[in-house]
Length: 478
Image (cartoon, rainbow, N blue to C red):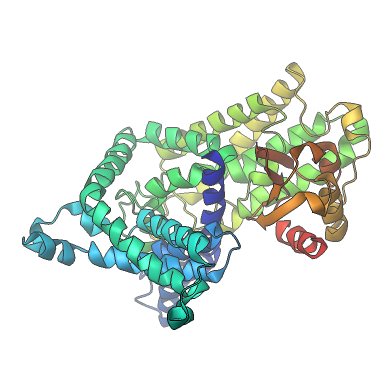
């Protein structure tokens, strides 16, 4: 089950990767026309509409992205099947349809059905489409129906399964929706404390890839909160909207890079160069783009207690930022790019306050990380036992992706031991035959941030934002 959820988490990153372009388009649009939100400038209106086209249709992107991501071979047919499922379910459960089926006025339809076109339904549709694809892509029909054999029958089967799913949701969706709303309201009602709890859980769930499910409740319109969408559309409440995003900026732009500096300063003298190659690149990624996985995976398994401290500090940051009334937002993550682009967004409030807050948190991160590392002798990068890193080569920092892929593949037991290869934004995800042939020391020699082994047949190698280039080289080798 955990393996399935982690794969789903990876699949969710495919549509999320579309969001940076929305952030850029809308950010520039608001810079051009911050007061009229496009009403006073045709270029600003054009950019805002273009960016909004992605934000407003995130649920459809989830349906397609999850369909492709959960397919055994990532075939686009599964994405089409996900879209078929989405159209079927949302049409059958639209308020007008429900009113007709029940024989009641549309005004009396449960509120849950007015929120059927959400990311939750998009994810469900993608899963249905992928499941039908994986099961029926090789189906052979009689000669008279041979045209519909194989992948061509997937959409047909998906439509049938989606009708059944819509029938089930007709009865249970109001219950599910009510539960999600109650959960969201219970967090929202606690104000700044709730923002801190959410931020803490967000970091805590990253090792399992389950933070996306939590994010969907607060960032998107699954439970009526829609923090991300309201922030960029200007439809939220000024001073409140953005509270589930703003607290991440001090951590990602200042805290984590400062923590990386502390890890570098506490590294053994003979390993500082190796540590610098890993930590500084990861720190830059966190600061500039808000992609934190390369840095977090560099210490979360080597020093889990330190990662817990990081999660707590993230929660505290969210509480502080919420209380002082600073609001900024993002479409992708809380890095410098999204921070600057959000300055003129309708719901931005005192974004410059995040700079001094970030500096303070940078100091706190450095002091706390350095104290914990030295006090408890934590094996953070550069502090490993000498025999573990004696043959370490930082080939990744030299952008020699062919060599990186070669070193990782050898550590996995060779191409004969690899049955499947995929990647998300920062990780290689591999399926293997014999787990005893995996040599983690050899894999780490490539300079990767970390390794996860969710099951005996699964290995995840945390490479960083350059993972696509490594994956491409490894696919050639396979």
